[in-house]
Length: 296
Image (cartoon, rainbow, N blue to C red; front, top):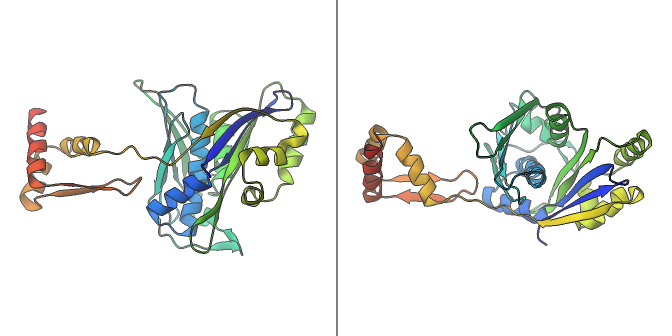
């Protein structure tokens, strides 16, 4: 089943909701990165949130980048999303050792760490991108996104994100929701929403049983009478290509490029996001050197 996100309102337009099933998206990321369970759990949660936030964009040109660095052994988590909800991402150390908080519950917080920040960069193609940053709350990802929304965007937000990894490291279930209360909400509705969210089992358990976002929406928010507004197919897609990497090689300058040609006779570059390798032979590098020389 394709990964899918739905956008909805509830409680007479007092609540905005995004619900995602990103199982296929996260499984694709796992196939590319061959990560340990705790690494793909952290990356998958971040990819899901990034996909939803991309769909929140008000501009078709916006490029969204999320960076999470908590000082833990996983290193940095970097994800990039666009207004169509498509994403790419990686973790610095995909082979970080997995530990459990208790049987069946990965200790994502210890792998990520919480001595750092979550940083959101929104690039509209203008001179200066918007950059918002907030200290990490737990390193468990969902709480960290909720903290970012509350303090950097002054938007009260409930966030649930999860990835369930099977014994063969495939992804059994992945997804989550982001729910935001709107300015016109009354206290009774807030109380009902908080009570409902507090009573829920883990989001991956819900997704495993209620596979479609529509079923998850109905299960969680039925009493608040949700209305579905839009539905989006989303995916893990990488836009790397040879031309971009040519520009990267040219940008290192004439001196370093000459050194590579003389010593190595070739260059091999790998995309962090999809692990695709690009090889540039000596003849190709000499052409790029000519371009670098022209730019002096």
